[in-house]
Length: 200
Image 1: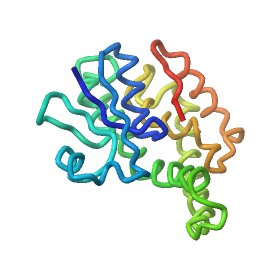
Image 2: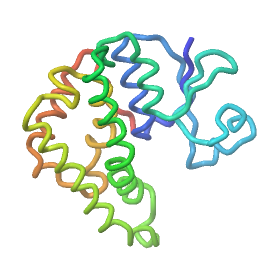
Image 3: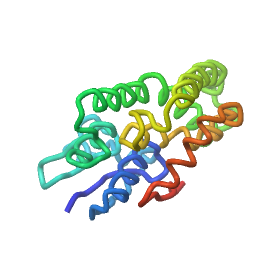
């Protein structure tokens, strides 16, 4: 059975959980609290030397890290990872966008607002994070005005990856009301078979 090492409140881990539920694949979840240092233990570092979650253990000694790589591996052969080369490239484009232009701002702002104290020095980062996060949301808004999902007409891993932190963007101080196409897309994602709400 697949084993996922993850933290339920993490958007990157939620991606993997959501995909597995929608694929209907059995898995074992091992909760790992990275905030409490559980990803820095010798045992965990033996599985993932980078010391992060999520981590997928396919079988003993065979592990895969990085949330979007895990999504592609698990979705292979399903409609969630397009077989058409152009549509697959579109899905990959949005996976890269999520990791480089979206998650570093929206997820980090969420982390600072939810888990750091009001006097924490990192709160000084919030104006810049919100500015860059708003730019990412604007790109998404423009794209979703032309098509219902990120890689065309059907729901794919690109939507799962972008949903994970977009649905919780308000936690980081983002007002999604100014992005109506994004809000409609969030509802389309929630309407997909097998959808599960993130546990926070």
